[in-house]
Amino acid sequence: MGIAASGGVGKFLTEWIIDGMPSIDLSSHDILRHVPHHNNPQFLAERVKETLGKKFKVKCGKFLE
Image (cartoon, rainbow, N blue to C red; front, top):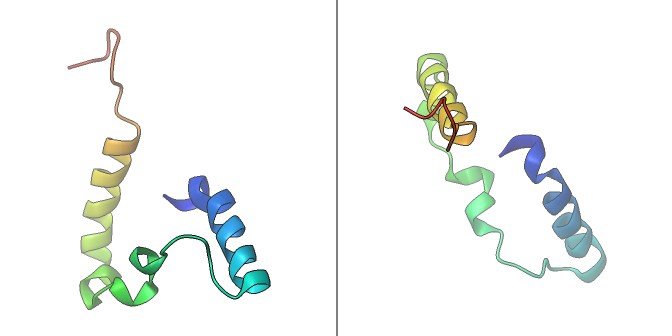
C-alpha cells in the first residue's frame, strides 16, 4: 500500500533491470489491472475511507468497538 511497499518495489525493479526478470511474479501489480471507475473521484473518495479504515483499524485496547 503506497509508500509502505516502496522498499519491495525497489528491490524487484532492480532485479528486473539487472537480471532481466524479477524473482517473483509481479503481474498482480500491473497498472493495466485498473478499470475506468478507478479514475472516478467519487469512487476514489469512498475507497480511500475503506482502505485507510482497514489499514489503521485499532485491533485491541480500549478503542476496540
